[in-house]
Image 1: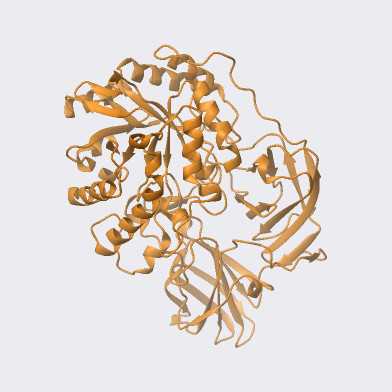
Image 2: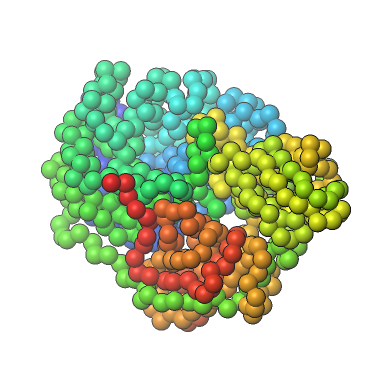
Length: 583
């Protein structure tokens, strides 16, 4: 692979002028059997490069465990990109934002009560250095200097929006170099934060989604020489629960792209293909109010969540063709879809009844946080005995993020962090009644100081003003459902329950699981965690990648946190429902 050079006039590749035409494609948001398809479609749109973040929290789920296999086989993704003739921009963090759980920073760091993330805190730097060495050592052969596709590597991510400690960035750059990264480095920041996040001797790039000429002129005024580049050209946006589905007019986005390319600048679309926050991996924002991100990361991108071209694909290809060669041929056709069907869920298992099969309770004076339980995702089930009878007021200092409260197994209310709720009144039927609190981690905050986002019940829990003591804390990560004791469905379970059904498939193809009439929970197909659903919307379907299905009998499991849909059916359809858009 040729080498990228940065000189006074811009980028060169093996001595020839070069413009990066790149698009975001996060391997960890796409089923690995679909990587090659998405990369091919990137090339066919006219891109010569793809960009990906690296989620530290998935690759290193515990300090002593590191993985680069399966859906996290980054070396394979890089090989596939190279085979397609694409270069790669690598963005390893340690912080990635990305509307990803915790911005990609592993939750186990938060077990240290006073740790300062994204800083020169020695504990953080030691963990980062270890991570980068584990990641980059096997990636060295994939650097352009070694014949691989990786042209450049990013230092941190939008650090200027968080801090201004140049010594911290210098440490990260030195670590990258020590780990063998000998290709160009770059930083990216929104225009107002550019100087705070820049690093002397490292290419500074800008992130924006409109007013391209204005922002690039500002970048040129700050950087009189060298390449002009936007690392995140926002051509869509993400969705949050309770809002509308965000879209951007393809024509308007194409005009902005034309304006950008007319300046001679390089570009990376954010996103070319967004993909999905499978399982529990979505992030959240907290600007005085906590707002969790939905499961879909469709992003209104040129490729939709199922990898099908959208109107932006054709519009952007036409613009790119004005400035660079574009492969001949029509826009790729949409992929095949599974024939619609309704699936009855004929077996169930109550979560509270069978919680012991899903996690081991830990006794303590107070409720333990997820981080103290060495838990990344999922739920924690807290229990204690109530010392009084009659009307009572429960007060919880901090609910992170959504607590369903039960007394002797009967639901008495819900407390949501998003609504700033802390108190709940109910009647205790007898002394010694069991208080059960099921707490869902709805996604750790991925932006700003809120990334120090510990989960569970934090602070004091009071009953009529007196602190409750003597708790069990049971982690329920739900990484596998093999131990759930399903039985034929009878009466509708009270409270959270798993529901299971089977269906037959002849030819596996992409599908969308619709949960009409269900309230809130999670869904799996053949053990693959599709993500969260919530009647609050806007999203009302979950993407099912074709490789998750198999010829013959398939299984669907739904964890409904409230009450099961009366018909206990789910629907596989050939179209997505991401919700209404704002008029």
